[in-house]
Image 1: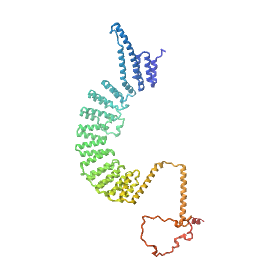
Image 2: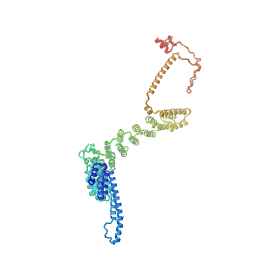
Image 3: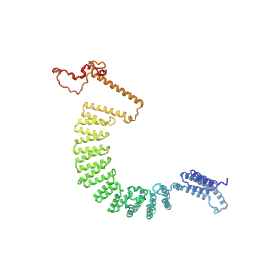
Length: 632
């Protein structure tokens, strides 16, 4: 069939079936190669590499193209060997070497160069495919520039194309890095700061998505000037960037995308921080204070910036201004962000005035502890107590520590009580620490009671209060499992061996057995397992029957008790001699009292009114009989 246009048919298939593009391009090139039109096949492969849009199609076309070039090279090498043999025979016959044209070996070398160039172009061709998929992929543009690192002209052309193609609103990645890399290329390759400044100036006018992108461009520009020791130029760049508006906008305007990013730039903390650092290093005191004051007015400071400003003022001996900077920062931040500011403020104040302004210092401490969170309370209270010990009253220091034990987090409470006990013992003696121990035992969680009780018992042992120490051991035993807290029981055992007797040691063993049973019950029947168990209907009915049977048993027992109380015993009674004597009480105190035989006791009759109805002849009847008699 000669009238069929194969090229048009296959190209229409390429447009219609996008998932088979690579296979169809290879088929078209193979058609021309089979027909002997090798140059046309090569053009088809090149066209395919420049049009496919997926990596899968690119890999298929490139592999087929490389195989085509290898087969052509192999064919030319075979022809070259045959032509060399014919040329040798011709030279021997004629003796004229100059009569030969382009040798076959030169064509083989040319084919070899084409194959090597194709392999070297693979990375660039693949990068082109990825950029055709997404021309706003910033990372792929950086990779494309890196492919031309040895060709400055092509690198500059690629940068220009990249910044012109990438739309910041649709970019994948950070588009400002292209502008920064473009400027750095001029800076490093040619030391061309003039063109680098032009690139940076154009970059500051791009409509980026976020304020941080534009701030990064300005910061990169200032850092370039610093690298080349153009300090005044760097300050001028930052002065252009950090321009506060006449009207202070709302705090939410920084994230308002409807406002141009250039008008929201003044809210960038990153930019102002670099500006403040430059002014501290190369500016004057007044210019630096003006920058920091502008940051406070715009409310773009961080706790670290507050600390930096205060430290800067302290270096220049402006202590009261430094304290005002701390207070400005405290007005802007709450806990936990205000915690480092409070710590620095209080330490600097104490270092500056020591004990000269006690009331002012106490007022500051009270303001701090009134707002502090439980997680940060420990450090502030310890600093407060230390100040009172050094410059105030010991009693006030103890009051602060007592307040701190209730203000800190429950996880830090044991450590706080330990500090409190230690300071009370040092200042007022160990006997005064008993009250603290009592309070600690009431306030601490169960997991912290054991070490605290052991310390308390050890204190009482040193003071010779053996009974008090034993009472502490007995109280703490209910929280200490013999299997998990063996050190507690060993300590109590050693205590009884040293200070107790057989009776107290036996009591210790009894307590231990009861605690073992208590913890064993808890382990065998955990509350969560009991809560998760749902009784079946049969179990509910069985429990109901058992409950009714128990009620009947209780009623019968009450009836028997009433009958026995009125002398109506419902069964045979055991003989008197078979009744057991009551158990002797080992702790009973024997009193030396004479026998009753020597006493003259007179008996008087009991009035009949005392017995009431019982004297009417019903005294011999039981409760049931009397009730039946009344009913009858």
